[in-house]
Length: 244
Image (cartoon, rainbow, N blue to C red; front, side, top):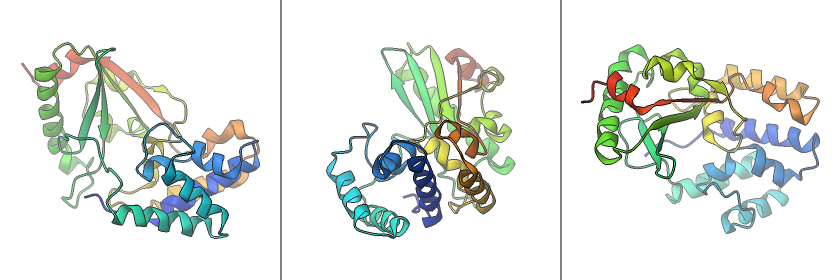
């Protein structure tokens, strides 16, 4: 089971929600719902349904306290301790998983840090382990989704060579800027170190930019790394990993 997120991870998102609330017509609860990953972090789906009982309980508690960060963190810990938060997509191949959109014949890959070696999951010491993860996953994909045509990814991680080197060159070179994706962990994960703790330097840099934000439309400037979307034909992956 993945370790719980640190309180500082919630603090930076709450600070961002406060600022976007102040710069827009959104209520504070709406700003948290639309401009942070808290809905998903609490174990809820992509619907962002404000009437979901779990979310309603959270918002109700939020209205009754001046300690919004502490309430958010304690509510999360309560759900985490009760094991009501699905951690990852399954099945998994090491640090990787995928979703298959059969109507589009598209594979969407996901990464989560499930490397407990003591090294960073994308360190040079663990590069071969990640390649092995991906070889196994794509061998599975080729067997069970022979009709798949394309692979898509979306994450801040595509800004890093340590990540893109695990894939065919054309895949990384296709990177294009995406909408912020504020409600997914694929953007906010950049503030966590490989050991699960907050990257204080990046967090401080982010919070400084948030404090200087003057318009809602400029919010993407607060983030050190932007969300990138990449894609490539699936045959390139089979060739890259030596899958017959």
